[in-house]
Amino acid sequence: MTYAAVLADTTFRALFATRTFAIAADTVRMVALSALVFSSTGSTLLAAVAYGIGFLPQLLGGSLLGAVADLLPPRRLLTLGYAVQFGSGLTLALAHLPVWPSLALVAAVSMVTPLLNGAVGRVVADVLSGESYVLGRSLLSLALSVAQLAGMAGAGAAIAALGARHALLITAALHLIAAAWVRLRLPALPVPAGEPGAPSIVRRSWAGNGQLLRGRTTRTLFLAQWIPPACVTAAESLLVPYVAVRGLPAETGGLLLACLPVGMLLGSLLLGRTAGPALRRRLLVPTMAVVGLPLLGFAVPGLPVWGCGALLVLAGGGFSYELGIQQRFRDVVPVSARGQAFSLLTTGLMAAQGISPAIAGALAGFVPVVDVIALCGAVSVLAAVRFRLRAAEVMGRLTPP
Image (cartoon, rainbow, N blue to C red; front, side, top):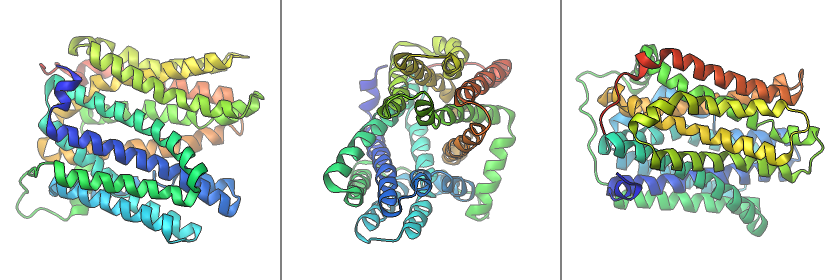
């Protein structure tokens, strides 16, 4: 099985392309809106809020509406979702809204993101299985890294050429392309049969999330995919203060921030392409520990910049551990609730990544930044150790490819 064989599936190819466009669009929006708010208000606090305003509302959307991913046909849901995001990008670019209505608009629209992620996750799990599913998830991880890097670079170039407000037109255009592509190229796939007398969407979503989190196996798999990324995001949020404390050039922070997605791209490509199911299982806990271990190195006094970058690339590469978990996650989740399960997975991840920087920032007010970064790494390693103690029970037997 190869990446080319997975991309030959027309359904997966449509999802891969449109997800890449959507992630790039969201990245451009985050940077451009933050720059626009800062230029309008001069407030670093509001600029930071604008940058992350789309994260926490996803918790509300996934908690209350996650079941929609299993109730609406994927093509209709994805087309509508990307169309709504296109409309919000166009409004931000052309309507000259005040700051707070702009932030409220982004927050409201962000509530649909978990539903779209849930629909994508369910369709991929339905059309791919075994080794093709693992490679498909690897390709989606690659798309995430490439789209984020391209979005960051493209946002900077667009702001310089068009200004922050008109750079938001790129966000709108990318979401429009994604909506059109889904509508024209994604097959009309069915949804699972509903139960007679099913409760409302909110009640079904709340009950479904509770059932998924109460299960020991699913809860452990959720936490294994939430805690290490949250720890790394917390450490990542301190890189700019770390650079400032050490008296390094300001541009060093941007270079260090780029190292993590580079490592994620390389790790996913390497493990996804060269390792089989048995090897990925043996490497699961070691690669999971690699996410946090390099962060401990930041406590070394006078660590050279190239050393910092190398540690971050290594930490990013450790995220390839997720390839060893995703097949098991697909298999243990009920088919009728796959969309909601993937929605909850991304919802919890966004919430954890939204909260952890605030916790790290608060700790950095009392202890040195380098110690907080190292502490983030230690917590991630402890999560790997805890998973190791449950691995035999949670992972069971590998599904044959």
